[in-house]
Length: 94
Image (tube, rainbow, N blue to C red; front, side, top):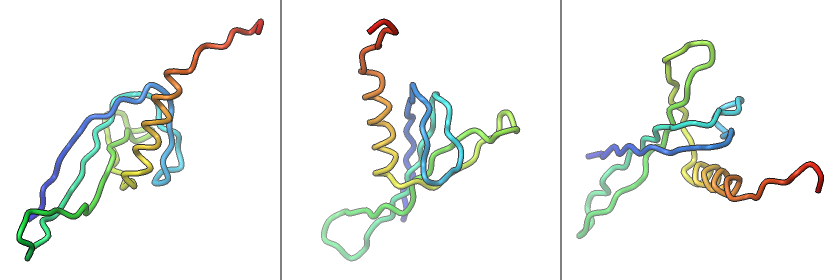
């Protein structure tokens, strides 16, 4: 038995992931995770099978491409995006 969950992530800056050659624009992205039940245990436990992010296809407006991504890499990209947001603006005269 497998369970698929979906979450929405917001990026305020461009980001890149290993599964694609292109830098992704800022925006809202859907991430789907599929876990499967580990059978034979005396408690419920699940194993991550796949994590994909849906990104827009270049040159095909309205079309999405599912890219398999490492969950750790995705969290690093999101953490980097959040730290970019917290950086103070640097003025040109400084």
